[in-house]
Length: 302
Length: 255
Image (cartoon, rainbow over all chains, first blue to last red; front, side, top):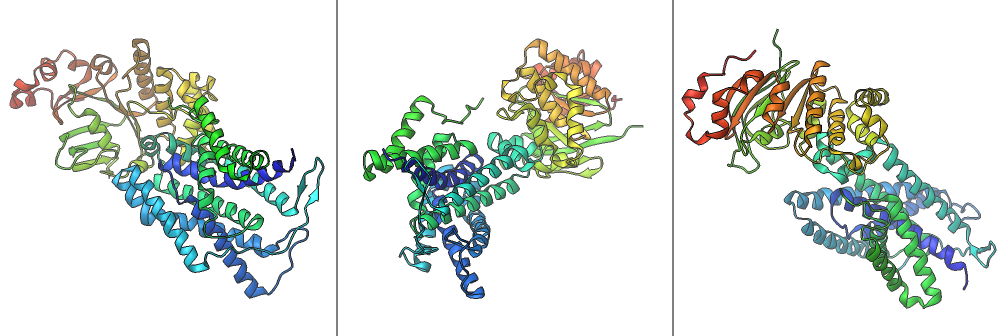
């Protein structure tokens, strides 16, 4: 068996994991499954693409930072894109989810997120067309790193970025007052208010974090594969599988779940064929849930 | 000199519009006092203090804290205004450590002040200090109550409001919790509590109110109330009550 699946799996797992963090935070704090989360990824990728284009129009052609396929405009654009996607998530919440939440039925909010997902996707198709596009058409040479594994510089950079982001979110959740407030809110919303937590503010922070991370995941997909309006929707099931596998509400769980799903998919492509890709991750998900219904890092409510 | 900390006037409150559960309750709590609200099941005791804490919609009346109108202020602003509330159940975050339970409540303190304040709480509640890394959900019932009270005290509230602190505790822990409250009062904290366990609450209280059908029907000095025939009647024979008669005794006798 070719060990290349390890790198492929880590990369797929990073994209899934970054998305799954948003899914798991939204679920644990707002108590609904946001099916529009995948489309935040696509919006993030397109927003970043648009900013890259704007920077190109302003500063002319800028050479990529060798050996990477991209230069500083993409890095600057991702940061802007994260802000745009965070605000998009916030706007969607204000316009749609918050109003429905006030009526108090979770299933209505879930259905609304389906609708929002379709609307967001169609809007992208309308603005950018459904033809795939790319950040860069340059072809990178993969370097052999031993054991038959080859890695491109872009892939290494993106894996490092994922590690930094995951660590950052983990520290935010466990070491800061905002993170503790998010934990508190997910465990007992009424008590969170009693101890002085401004629930509306924490909800806003949650959307911004989820949106920003989705943007990064979308840009990763854009750099390594391609950008198209359906790119995020296709990630939806693996993301939810990762969030549930890791245990809803757990940031490390979502990332580990993402890596497991990503590796399993990459391995399955080699062992049983690409058409089984999605099935394998769900078989893993179901078998874990049979043994441990609360997920790997989930904790039973007491 | 008496200084009123909490002044609740003609409060009306309820979960559903048009269905008031608290129907014109008036109670006051003076600085340094323990005031107990008693009453039969369904009298609206819990609703009354939840309304004071901003958790139940208020439809009439006012709540003043240190003279400032806090009627229907959003629940999350109450600690900043000086009112700390300890709910009856689910009053800790079970999956967070004891220390994080305390830290998360320190949002209104200066970040620099927080560690010292947490150490002060550990000093006052050594049981918590020993288990600072334990998930709060693994604490015993009495320790949970201790944690919930420490969490409320940590922000220097002007008044500590508790909903049945003895509920669900074994007798050993009940007396522990009441001793703890008496000690907290000695340190200068003003306390308002609702209790089913009238005997234990009156033993530590200064004054008490009896709430019946959402109204304060009787008020008196806590130590005298236990043997007060009107209280017995309010508890046992509320339906046959003559409202004119029970008004005259008790009121005005408060210290």
